[in-house]
Image (cartoon, helix red, strand yellow):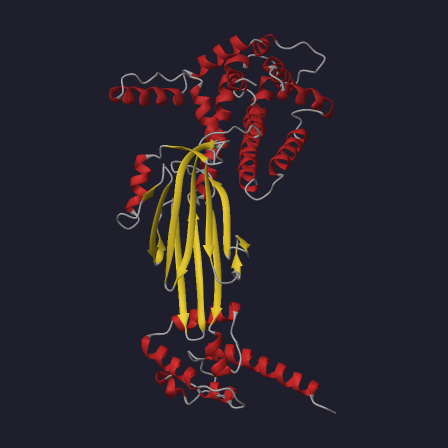
Length: 485
């Protein structure tokens, strides 16, 4: 369909806007490539970014465009002075960060590395752009749906209010249609979310909402082939005639009966647009646009006066939130071993966790954020073997231990580390673990099976006893099996 005909149709058939979701057009996009490499308690961050319009078919390199100066300045300010490298509009910045990560791409991120004598545990989390206010976004979409339903009701009352059966059409628009607009908005939002994770999301959305419309009698099975033909063609007149018959049916007019005279205007695109613009020009929404235009014109005299039809464009845009996800993001996190928990993909050849997605522009906030997370743990094999006889704590257990150890103050931390360094593999290892207590808890009368007072050492003691006890039991079992009979 041409843009002008879609503009005309969406006033009366907002569901036809779904077709626009399936049209893919190429356009320039900003590219952000984030490289992360943990280094002790900090993390080295390299950001490569540029704006390009496709790829040069001869060289295979992006067709670079001039990057936005304001954004370039903002990003550069977050990194060390003179760290910016410009290679023909392809920019690179580097820096080392602890705890909070720079909001260079847009969002918030943290990195934490907890180092102990038994090993270390790392955590990375980052949100890229988007909007987490689900309640606020839903309220905004539903408010816009109410506004659009009110527009249709007001216009229909102006044109058809004197027709017999209009009360039925009014009820349909005020109750069923109002609800269906909100449900369509929710389905649309669900499709936008699912399309980031499911390859068949567009097809599934179209089928599911098509079934929704069928169940609510917007069309019949017999009309499906004709409806598909009309939506996929450039025949806006055919669509308007279907809307005309739909409204007549909601007024109680049988399919075989003549149309009410007032509905004839729906068959004339020019008359219909004039009628709709006449109604819109008297609405509060259009008056608010004119008021804003008067203000804008004082600063920019050549500002064009808004058309009444722009009211519907604004409201429909708020219902369906057409802001695209035009920018592209790739994140690489280098790790010595695969993470225990992550929503990224592990590349064993590169030893990296990889995330890739499209994200919305900086000025938009209608999509959920894209989030990356990963947690990992690396045991100090030599130290654990020296004091436990084997690597006892790895994975989640090591992470839990690192979290506990990092929560201790300096005095308790020193006492615990000194105790661990005194341990040696042997039959009395479990007994030694049971005997440990912090100096500040010595008044508890010792740590034994009779003591019911919890202490700070209870958690790591049980964690290590379980790990070491299991190891010893396995060793003894193997030795028994290998012992000559």
